[in-house]
Image (cartoon, rainbow, N blue to C red; front, side, top):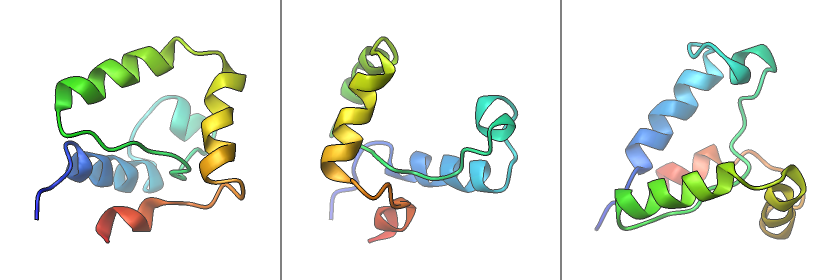
Length: 81
C-alpha cells in the first residue's frame, strides 16, 4: 500500500491542533476540525496547491468544502482508513 504524501504529517498536525498545542490562529479561534483535504503523490505538488489556495478568497475556499462535505463533518478519522 502506497502512503499518500503528507498523510502522516497531516494526522500529526490534526492531533496537535485538537490538543491546542499549536499557537496562532487555530488555537485562538478554536479551529480543530478537518473539513477538507486533498491527497497528492508528491510533496512538491501538495505545497504548490497549498500556496495556490492561500491566495484564494474565502468564498472560493468554501465552495469545494460545500461540494464534498456539505455537513462540514470532521474528516480526521478518514486519514487512518
